[in-house]
Image (tube, rainbow, N blue to C red; front, side, top):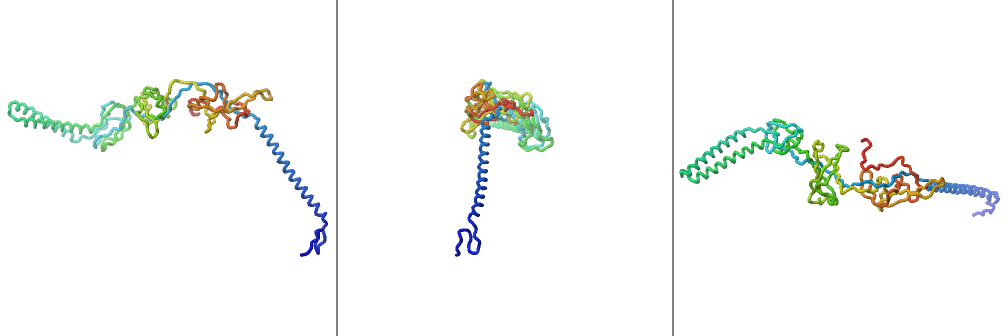
Length: 396
C-alpha cells in the first residue's frame, strides 16, 4: 500500500494545499446556516401569526339566535296510532251454492236492517215445500180425527201417538224445506252502507263466496294501543281527538267506550276503543288515525324549540346568554353559559323544560355547536328555528 501525503497528494500526483479545501467547506456551512435560519424564522413567523389568529378568533363573538324562556299553556297528552273500524261490519256471503237469480241492491247504497239483497235460483224448492205442507195438513187432519175416535174408543192410544209423531215429523220437514229456501236469500243483518257488488245475475255462486260488504258507519270506532303506563290516565268516557291524513287539519272528537281487561304480553300495550260521530261518513273502516288523549287539566311550562337542546348521554344541555360587563365600545358584553336541563314531553317543534332555566332567561336557539361556557356571542334573530306546537308543511 502506497503512502498518502498529508497535503492531499500521493505518488505521481501534485500536492493540494490544505487552505484550498477549507474555503469551500466554510461556504457550504454558511449556506446551510442561512437556509436553516430561514426555515426556523418562517416557522416562528407562522406560529406567531397563527397564535394571533387563534387569539382573535377566540375573542370574536359567535353569532347565535335566541329565544326568551316564557311560560306557556301545556296540555299533557297520550299519543297513539289507531285503526278505524265499524260498530257493525260484515262481508255478506251465501250459505249454500247456487245460481244468482236476482240482485236487489246497488253498490254503495245505504240499506235498512232486513232488506233483501240477493236471491239464488229456487229451482224446485217451492214445489217441495208445498208438497211437504200438504203432507203436514193431512197429518194434522188424521191426528184430529183419531183424537175424536179415541174418545169414542174406536182407535187405540198407540194409533193416536203415532199420528202425533207423524204430524210433528211433517211439520219439521216443512220447516227444514223453508230454511233451505231462506238460505238462498241474503238479507242485510243490520242497517249500514254497502260496498261494491262482487256478483252478477246468472253467475254461479259457491257457498261462502263474498257477495258484498256491509258497514255501519255512524257512529264509528277507532281501536288503538297505548303503553301500560298510560292506564293510570285512561277511563271510559274520556275525550279523545283523532286526525287522519286524508283530511289534513280536521280534528275528530270522540270518547273512550272500552278499555281491554288485559295488557298484551308481547308489547306491554293495552288496547282501547273510542267512538266517534260520523254522520258525514268521512271516516271509513281500515283507515289509520293519530289519536291523542288529554291527561288531566292544562298546566303551564317553560317551552323551547327542540333545536335549542343539545342531547347527550351524560345529560341534556342548553346555552344561556349572560351579560358580563361592557366591551371597548361601551356595549354590553354577552357570553354563553352552558346549563343542564330537565325535559318533559314534546309537542310539535316544542319541548317542555321542567328544570335548569328560569322564566326570562335568554336561551340560544341555533349556533350552539360552536359555543362553550364563556364564549362571547352576538345575537341575530333574523332567522329562528321553528317553535310551533302544531307545525304544518310549508306547502299547506
